[in-house]
Image (tube, rainbow, N blue to C red; front, side, top):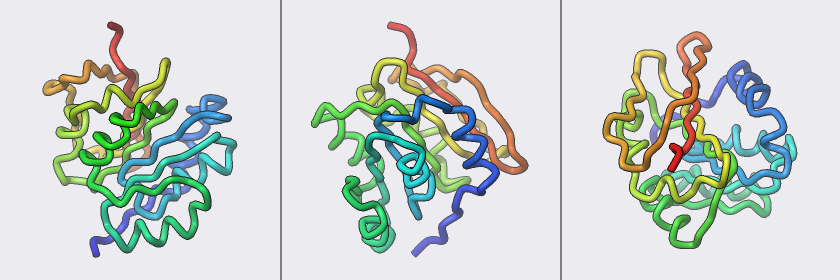
Amino acid sequence: MKDVRPTSGRVVSALFSILGRRVEGGRFLDLFAGTGRVGLEALRRGAGSCVFVESVRARAEELRLRAGESVVLGLEVRRAVSWLSKRGMKFDVIFADPPYSSGWCEALPAVQNLNALFADDAVMVVEHSVREVLTLSENPNGLEVISSREYGETCLTFIRRGQE
């Protein structure tokens, strides 16, 4: 099983400070959930629901035990996005913490049907290494970067669905 790199407490604190009231009562999606730290914190801070996506079976099983009534999908991210979009599920906050230096910073914005998961005024936050550039050049989903914030070696990039 690949090692997990949990989001640091400093970054989690900054993330939820920036998201503010958007989390309260909102629908939260935690992609590349790992230990589920961020999604569980969203629930602790009042999110109405959280769906966790973790492709490593053993971690997904552990997360099911910790996540209570929440949905935990033990699927690869592309398959999970397809599964969620076919069911018409929408989220107010989409958080993604792909493995660093895995190519996901480039691939994630182009995942088919990702834009279908955005509720009105939703925000997507991608956690990545400061050494990786999150590019929207291959972006059939019409996503736009709002801002990026750096915390040591970690960067949080905030994205929204483009204006139609």
